[in-house]
Length: 365
Length: 189
Image (tube, rainbow over all chains, first blue to last red):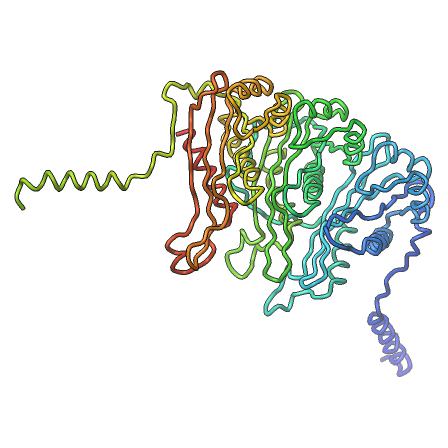
């Protein structure tokens, strides 16, 4: 039988261990400066705001950088990046061209660039956020290594009597940033919502060759609605989906933009075959994807349903013809039959679902 | 009933039923070989509605759906636009025969489709309201500029349920798709 003193020591030890478990979880500190000096770091560009409203892009960037650093990603110090941006007069943060990527690698040692867009940021109830990030290498020809999106709304899962509603914008933002950081660092990506397209929504001239890898340039879509940035957002969703498919080498949009500007290619009503010819040669691509957006709306309010309407066209270099096309419109309530089950709360998630369905069905392996 | 009344009554019934028949909504040139058409261009549509984007929306839906049938190749809108500016068509919604022939040569189209959006949006009657669309299309053969097919379609509007129970009818996009599908069906039937 154990002695009285040994028993009390054991109880004390257990008590200490239990109390230690109840201790508050502190955020692991990250200074933002010393995370990654030298080779192999990733430069996180300031966030591009495509939400059509205001968004705290600086704070979002800092928090995303902190979470990525905590998950082991070496980040180029912000001051060093700012110096580089000032030196090269880099103002456009929605993409990176080959010359800038090369300069960034040479001058800072960054092996990659993280380009992030804020697609949606709303703080009134229900708070909503949608972010898209892509990791681009700073090789001679920048390559999209990984691309992830996250779209959350405070009323995604309201639950019984609304117990699941999230009313604080900060909670939704934190959750979105955490999911994005996890997805970018090898974690599980946010699942794409299921969307059913109309039976006559997709046209495919002939299936793509199964073993071949295609180089694709995605041009910004024409925004014919009232959003202002919907064309760029839809193009990003297509880029993300094509990257995830694995059989397409998608050209970094920054490179595409740079070439469009350099050769002063202005497309007033879609891509003509003459424009396409020039782009095929300039970008050395097999396919060009373009399209137009008629509606892209995130209506505010608890019962409001997002609306997305767009069409896309894939032009092939060898035949100089459209080999794939799709066009459809959906709302977030299309799959709801009872109790809001199947509801999609954001236009970003709805667009991601539509794009996934269209690409997976006809262009996937 | 006396037998002599049967004939006048039958005549009256036939005349009355003939009055109920709707107007013919399709014209098809009997001498045209539609199987010879492989590539078509859809010109910008005329817009007679107050909704400024109606014509572009309908054209977009029509392009996608016609392409999706797989029966005809539809020239991308950007290429059609290039053809229009190259030929210098001042009014692309109603091109002349000469302009049509020229533009078809530039963009290599076997036929050209023109059309009009006559109604697009909400219609009201008393306290009821519903979305409605009315479209017409023509297919012109490019060598002669002759209209070889013409069709019109109307969808939506205030139905009996809208009058009795209210509601705003179907969404505009759904009606547009149905109307365009109906027009395409008339082209291939």
